[in-house]
Image 1 (spheres, protein in one colour):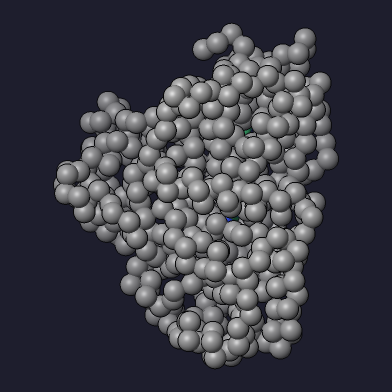
Image 2 (cartoon, helix red, strand yellow):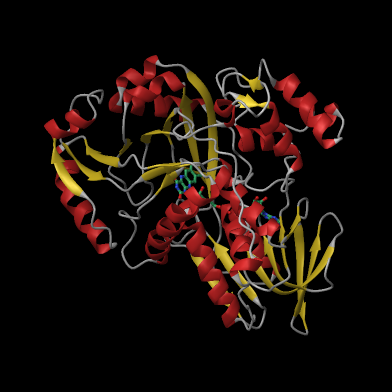
Length: 463
Ligand SMILES: Cc1cc2nc3c(=O)[nH]c(=O)nc-3n(C[C@H](O)[C@H](O)[C@H](O)COP(=O)(O)OP(=O)(O)OC[C@H]3O[C@@H](n4cnc5c(N)ncnc54)[C@H](O)[C@@H]3O)c2cc1C
């Protein structure tokens, strides 16, 4: 551990890991820390996994600019790192006259956001593209570049690359105090660690306002907007070819039906403003509301089996845009209020952060190409070859998701290694299929215990 880090990034979600990755391309001493034991285990593990074009952003907003840039960057990066991405496109479907009339406005907004790929189609064309849709569609806007992506492997790839290029990964570091003096910030954690840094990046998601307040700063308050989702069985996948989007409102993008790169179909999310930053449980009311919406969009979906339900919390604030700021005297960059589009914008947020750190006086000298190590993550996407198909990765352990022995061993041993069953799930898909681990969790635990040297009880008790 260096005596003084050049930069400490607080929060290892998709945003913090993207920042750490880009900083690892510079000659800098960098640490990435998180309050929890793993990367990508906050909001970043529970979203709808759309790579947004930004067609519906508020024109001129920071979000509009960074989503468009982030889309281009992540679309290029994903195939090089092994992150599954499928170019399926989306239909923004109008279900009544008012929505049909607003499609023109949506098309103009897309252009104002710099997205020129959208086109309007009539009802007949909608049913030619999606014959299983409920009756009553009045027309749609086709957004061919709205893609689906693997949300779990994205922060994993960023973190893996950051670590391979020298970033220190510090799990279980919950920042409770930031003291600035003589151009150095002393960072204290609840676990009694002390670190020193020239610059600090706040990528603390739902707690970005709390970390901001540790410097005595105000300006935004995070009020979580809970989004509940239902994941349907893979047999539902043939019901639709595109993501089906609703006409968005100012409050939410609305409930969508989307295929996932893992081969399932997802229905959601809801949008409920709540006060509890830990309230990620699904609710009866939320699930009922989703099923009613699903019935109106794709009735056949409701005959399919449900594999899982989950909820994620958007870091919404009283403002409608991201809360990005920097303070050169504090050597501080804040990436607050990254609510509904942070997966897409993550790599652009990293570029923005580097520029703001330089405005804070950070001297960042890029590493030469031969000094940089590239990485790949194991493909989890159904559309691409998975390890079991190569037959050289050991026996299949999770038969629902066809995860092999070697994948589980790798998940527990390659940095940033999983230390929980949830971490193994997000790295391999094991335990996330039809049986939700009923048949394979004992074997997964045994393999994890053997590979990691930690007792099996640690894995069982640490879901
Ligand atoms: C239902 C839903 C659907 C969404 N759909 C999409 C989508 O389709 N496409 C898209 O692009 N985006 C989508 N998003 C948004 C996207 O998921 C988020 O914008 C993104 O995950 C935010 O990442 P983050 O790194 O800022 O936050 P997080 O992933 O929450 O990471 C923040 C991290 O900071 C850590 N932390 C907090 N406080 C401290 C502290 N004091 N000390 C140390 N660590 C701390 C936390 O433990 C956490 O790991 C969706 C979000 C939701 C909820």
